Length: 187
Image (cartoon, rainbow, N blue to C red; front, side, top):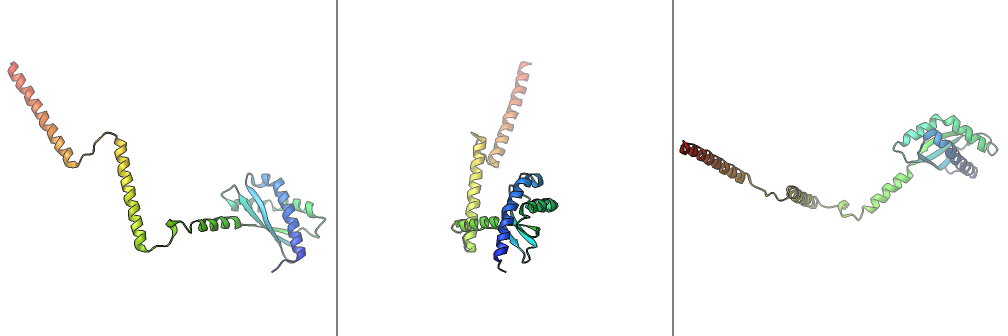
């Protein structure tokens, strides 16, 4: 339904005055969060004000709305003191989170990613080839990092390491024999 002129006038008045109330009472009610009144809609009989709020600087937007519901009488009383001469009765306040800005940011992100090659549609074959190429590049990078960690150390295969162990064992056996021969000569 389209709002009448009177509904829009009262909605604008409530938006302006309720914003002022939030500036004054907001620190006491919800702390450091930034809450702005994005729009107000009035019911046909002017008895209910639907207040849409944008909440920033907090992860839990619902908690802020809950705090406002808990302090509803305080907020409505302060609003009533400010608008009592312009309206016949103070409307009941109903709060809603306005996610318009969040949705707008999400849509902007989608538009930015339209020309991004990562997010364009491809055939399954192209996707698999890209995935394989990325994995191969990551594997090469990991191998290069492993080489850089050890510094001057050379890489050896398992066969080379086993051959080196056999060589050391043979040298050790020679040394023991040599020591045994020396002891025989000395006697």
